[in-house]
Image 1 (spheres, rainbow, N blue to C red):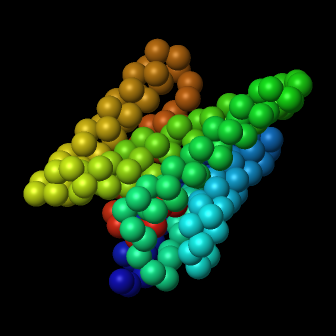
Image 2 (cartoon, helix red, strand yellow):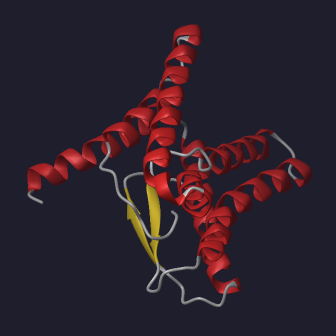
Length: 194
């Protein structure tokens, strides 16, 4: 790829980061990156539990991607995919149970949204990997076509729901930017979830 193509591929991620930087407080930024780190740590713990070589971690856009040296079996990939969001949800529950004050409530909300949001099946998320694993296992003849259709349908619903919320409240354009990021971002098929 040339430099112009690289710039076009990174423009949606840059736009999203700029919007978040201008609209959110430093505490939200700190919690967002801690949720990202905790999420990836969950994936790495799954690799260790499965006695696999630790993967290489790459940062791209507003997320991260793991790249394993050897392919995983489908059940191993499902375990690795689920551990990232489960670590975020577990941390959110711990923050709600043992934390006190607005910061812990915000930390729980960010981790919960990060974990559940990662299960939405679009944008090369953990949810998309799970959906593709499901279709390859149970409907191999039309797995890619069905998964592509459902991922685009989920992205469209997310985009229009975000626009509707913005229309109702006049605030919270972040969801629209996330949807545009995934829609305009370059599609990749990583071997391992991110």
